[in-house]
Image (cartoon, rainbow, N blue to C red; front, side, top):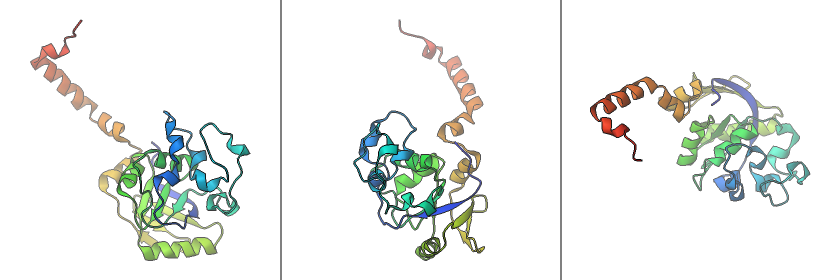
Length: 215
């Protein structure tokens, strides 16, 4: 998992409340057994004018010119600004996969659905909760100033605007440690590999029949 320490990036505003995971990555794309390749289908029903299915040539699909991510000023955005209850609906982990594989490193909203919020951290995506007032102000600034960027300092837990305004955010210590170190759940487990091996050796010494195989 790619570590998240200090990130500065272009902000794209998604001015919709209650964006569910089926809107983030529609159900027909969940058929894949791989964990990659979901970026082109992020917000598929909003980004394209046709109906998307797995295996389509996205270069040939008609884009919706009114959708925010298709607008030239937001190309290359790596921070998504959203409204309340982002990521509601089903618990599909494909949603943070699609956002991350599109190029987003962080999401900012007044609130997130719980399961989506947890899944985001587990996949290297930083969801930041700011107040309604702060989010409204950011929407105004992003819309007013093309090329609007924010700096996110995870170590200090602060979002910094172009004019130097600092917006503090909360993050649970273990989640922060994992993002800073680029650690997923497997990495956390492997950090205790020596203790696990020692336990297994001691257990087999006491109960050697556990190592027997039935032929």
